[in-house]
Amino acid sequence: MTNPLLTVLYVVLMPIAWVLWHILFRTRYIGRENLIHGRGFILAPNHISMMDPIFLVVMRFWAKRMRIFAKKELYEKNWFVSGFLDMCGCVAVRGTKEEMTIVQKTIEECKNGRGLLIFPEGTRSRTGEIGPIKSGVFVIADQAAVDIIPCRIIYGTRDGRLHPFCRVRVCFGRPIPAAELSMGGKRDIARLRANKQRLADAWETLYQENRFDRRKNET
Image 1 (cartoon, rainbow, N blue to C red):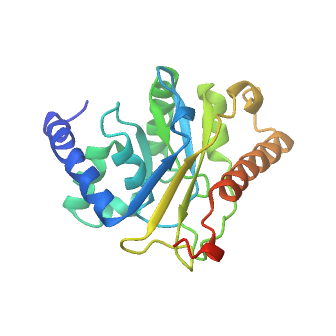
Image 2: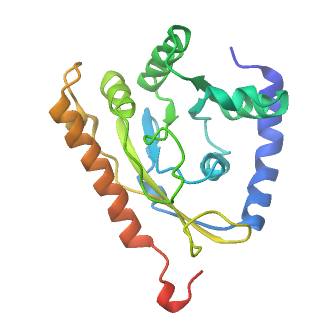
C-alpha cells in the first residue's frame, strides 16, 4: 500500500525538482510521442550516471508514477535516500527469494497498465560506453506482455559523462512490440540474444540521430 505521506511529498516536491533540474542541466527531451499512455510498458534507458533516473522521474512528475527497479545497496545508504526512492516508486531488487515476490507483483502491475523503469545493463557504465545487456528486462517484458521503449541518455560533455550545467538529451525510440519480443514463456537463448541486439541497435540509432556535434563545439 502506498504511504500517503510519500504521495503528498511526491506531489509537492516533484514540480520543484523539475525546475531545479532544468536549471542545473540544459535538458531536452526528444521523442516523447513514443511514450505509451493507457497501458503498461517498460522504459529501458542506458545507464551512465546515478542521476539518470531523476531525468526520467522529473519528466513524468505529472503522470502516474512508474515502478523503478533500484539496487538494494541504494537502500542501505541512509533513511533520506531510502525515503526519496520510495517516494519515486522505487523497489529494491537483487534476486533474493523475497525480492522475487516484488518482481512478480511488478509484472502484475505492468499487466494492469503501470510503467516500469529498468536499466537493462544492470549497473552504471564506468566508461560511458554501453555495457552488456542483461536478460531480466526481456524476461519481465515477456511475462507481462508489454512493449519495451528504448531510451538513450546523452550527455554533451567531452567525456560523455554528467557534469553540472551540461547539455543533456533524453531520447525515446519507437516501442519494441511485445509480440516481437515474446519468448513463449521460456528462456529461449537465441531469442534472448536477438532481443538484446535489437535493443542495442535501437540505442545506437538514438545516439547517432541525436548526439552532440563536437565539430560545431556543441557542448
